[in-house]
Amino acid sequence: MNIVSVHPCGWRPLGLRRDIDWLFNDALRYFGRQSERKNEGVMAPRIDISETEKEYLINAELPGIEEKDIELEVHGDVLSIKAQREHESRDENEDEKRGYLKTERHYGMFQRKLQLPEDADAENVTASYKNGVLHVSVARKAPPKNESRKIAISA
Image 1 (tube, rainbow, N blue to C red):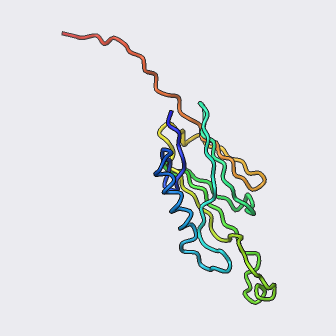
Image 2: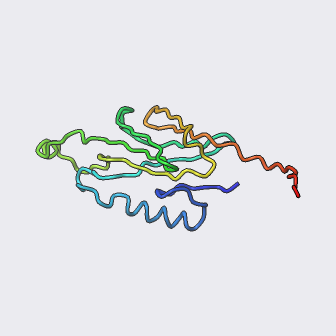
Image 3: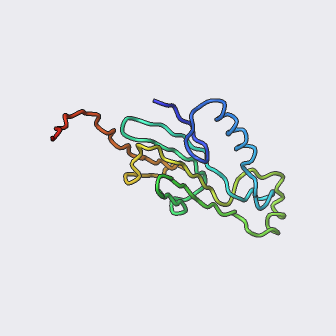
């Protein structure tokens, strides 16, 4: 069994590559953000992935997101998690009146795409959402039977 770690582009073996990917991912996480003050832009939700003999389990943190604002799709062998969190105050003047000293909460689009392993059953995915965490279960296909059989040879 190969232990896997998640990278925004898919699943990768643990090790130095993972650590380097994580470092760059974290540093570039807010690249393209629309507004420094409002923390807007596309963010990748933090996720955990585990596996059992029957399924892959993915837990994604989506704080402050309502269930109706989450979009979960499977396209081919890619699982996509998208969500949108609107800024509570869209009026710049109101923001200035509040006298913010610092804002660290994130607003805008959350997105994560995961390439599913070969044995994942993309037709058998279920999800639930509770307390800001999306729980996704992806069933695993039964491994092909490795049985041998005699083949008759005709003359």
